Length: 220
Image (cartoon, rainbow, N blue to C red; front, side, top):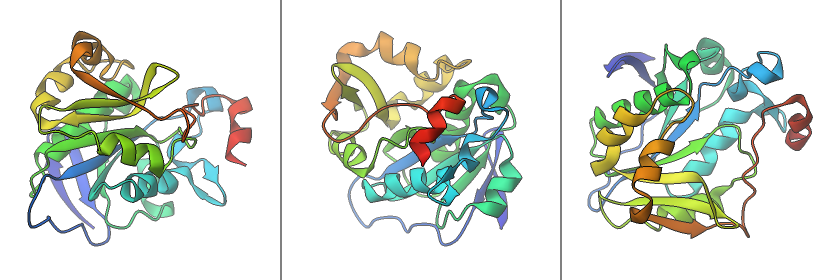
């Protein structure tokens, strides 16, 4: 594998990266998969078993099947094991050395990697590795809400905003500046709530998280 610097994070490409499209906007999937699974006894969420394979593989595949031309995956806990054990062809792997600080640091690392990509990216479609109830149908619906680099869109479930979320590139700097701790983009989105297009995905996805031992039954 070859490495290059993206912001403050190390970035690697596995397999053959997707080629840039000839025309039209480019949306990249941004998968946040750095969590250490503190409430799961320290088991990294990316490596939780899902139908015999690491959970991160499914999450990356869902973004591709939902229309993302390339997927950047932010790793943290057990990053080297994820590289060795997970099959993530064509994905850009971004290591976040500050992952223990919370989701905000991973979001900053991911957006920095997209901004530094050699191909132009107009929007980031962000998802979380520990939400296996969200599939390609929800990703595709939110992806379809793209209306330019100023777009803000998010899936909604029974009227409540959730993932995946779509950030047009015009918002990346503001989101990165506000992303601290475990709040991720929450503060930025709350400050710009009137600009967000909510996309109802209640009929095609379930936005539960895998956070506790009891939640692991959902991975069976």
